[in-house]
Image (tube, rainbow, N blue to C red; front, top):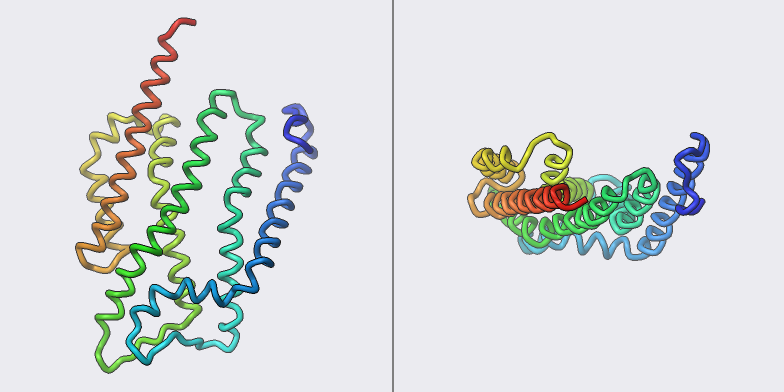
Length: 251
């Protein structure tokens, strides 16, 4: 069913049919990407584990404590990578489904918000891989007892980094979350500005929980979080000012 034929008066069954079609298209794309990537599954895992293996002492390596891990760890990574690459299409399908029910001014705001969300999530993941991982693994590989060889299980490592990817991807959505809070009426720019000190403290608390216990690593997460909050605050202030000007303008 094409978007141009979408009718708000359609019965529920028609909406469910369209939703089913969009879900099938999304699953099909993920499957296609997965099949294209699966041949390179071991290479993907080698790339993902590079920040850790670069820090391991000479003569040590990662291990598999389960007989199925050498297959299922790269398999799981490839599936997650397929979903990760398909995110723009998945969000487009969700947008195409709900867009006909939005007002024109809501569509104008939603499109850049959607694009910003995708970009910020990818930036958060890239920040975790290129900045946080080297710091985290450098710290953990240097604090262990001298008579203990660090040989990380490949499945445990994968679960750990996927959690961090998701955490940093979500953290980088702070500007979008700030805008939505203001637009929904949950709070306003003045109230958020007045709570800036608490926000900064909260950023450093989150940084302390997600990074090794040293001030450099904590700051590398906390400072970007605070700056992202300020970006969201600035955008909320600008969009609010523009909306006020439009409402006070000539009819």
